[in-house]
Length: 150
Image 1 (cartoon, rainbow, N blue to C red):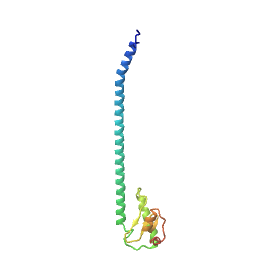
Image 2: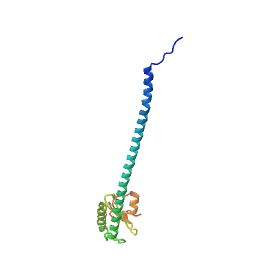
Image 3: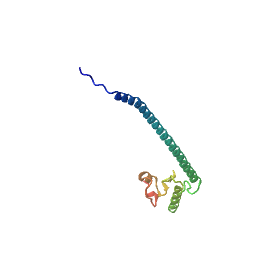
Image 4: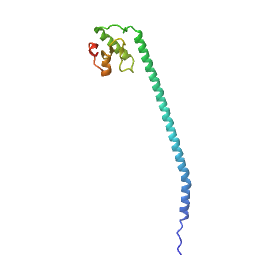
């Protein structure tokens, strides 16, 4: 009869100690990883909230600037509503629009449009409303805004 070879006592004890110490070690690593991931999520959430708060404040400032610019233009008599503009006044009004646009950093294009007039004033020149709609805000200036009127 042959005897089965039994593992040595040292191997049996080593395996049992490895299992006994590896289970808490694995649990500890899992716990640390979970806490680390939770902290990262909280930091990202807090950072996003900070960015959104800053963006909200910046948008509020921009809209306040735009409203004050609108009120300034409405109350100033540089652009009298309903007046018939002469060609020599066009450049003066376009320069005023350019100055107003530069006063607010966030504004890239600005247009003065009167409902009773068929043209607009912009930093790029005077043109018709149709030209603005067709060619976009970077249209070329016409000497006579009626050139673009259809």
